[in-house]
Image (cartoon, rainbow, N blue to C red; front, side):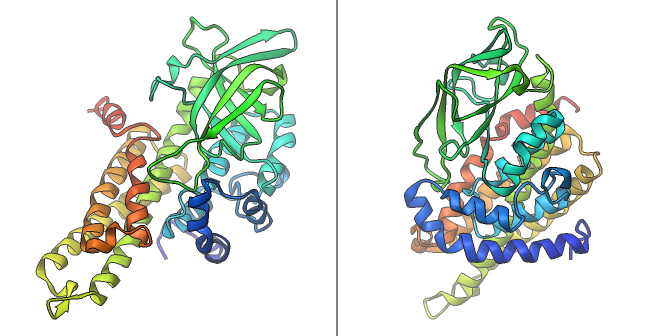
Length: 374
């Protein structure tokens, strides 16, 4: 047992692993073909107590901490089920409502998110703005007791299944201050675009969202007006560590599978493992994976104690994402031609991992954040 986890974390891991192996892993191939995970899975996960780990008990949640969250993230990554969008829903959207929502908002939405009846998404990315969220063009205009929202969002995880969108926009289009508003997808003027075709994470329902004079009550605003950017900044350290946690687990799982494969696969009268090149590649992978694990677990301890800095989170995200891409490429190579076949998990993991260097802030943005403290 790793020192970052308590006994209750490991008990939760057993529960999460059984669920993932029974309800998720056997269906991943079909969901990749469908381009979406069925809503029934969300309800099953809610019934099993696997959603929204950090939501307090008074709102129907399990009242856990980031350690429980990390366990769930790792168990999904262990079988390369990153496309299942629980993490965005549970660890980002729900956390925003817990942190900045009013008591009425928490009572209104959190119980349904915990049960899986309400699927939450974060609607920030827009066409053409990349990581520069302050340049978003979505407008949130005050009209009496309502806001009127107009704009377009893209690359939205869980967009096809979405029931509730925490979206960002500007009260004044000439300003750079952002505000956050919770929008039910059933409201007039709201529309979902078609599911976007991606090179990886094919089972994840990623889509565009459209706001055409969508009216929501003013009491749907999350936090204060014009404070959205600061809220986003405060949550980013955890969101970036999520990507590092996922990378560390994916590397370890694919390393184990690759070791088993090369020990079973025979060429020229001996196993692939018997070749020195293979052993050296795997030794290097093991060393790097162990170093990443130590750093990520240290960051996890800090985030659980409320001490993780933006720079440390950026370093974890940068190193984890870059290492994941490099090592999975090596592991795929050791599979030879079979590594290019989608039936092998290493091939799907390799493709899915490419986005880790993009979302949550690109690797270049991480370097910029780190360099500010040099």
